[in-house]
Length: 89
Image (cartoon, rainbow, N blue to C red; front, side, top):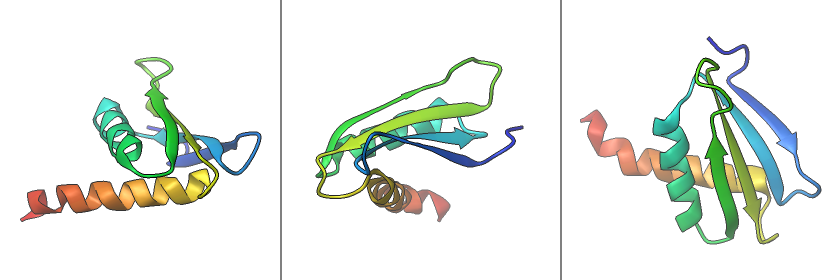
C-alpha cells in the first residue's frame, strides 16, 4: 500500500511536472497517458513504474504552456472518467 495517493514533483515551469500516483498500475498509467496525449495542449506524456514491487506510477506531463500541467491532469482525469462512465451502469 502506498503512503500517499498523489505526490507532485514540479518541473522547471508550470507547464511540466511528474505526478506520482499511489496504489496504481499500468491500467491507469497507460489509459491516462493515452487520454492526455489526445488532449489539446499536451506536448509530452509518459509513465513508468519504477519497480514492480512498488505501488506507484510516475506520470510525466508537459504542456505547450497554454495550460498548467496540473490543470491538464485534471482535464485528463475528467475525460477518462467520462470515457469509463458507461461501465458503472
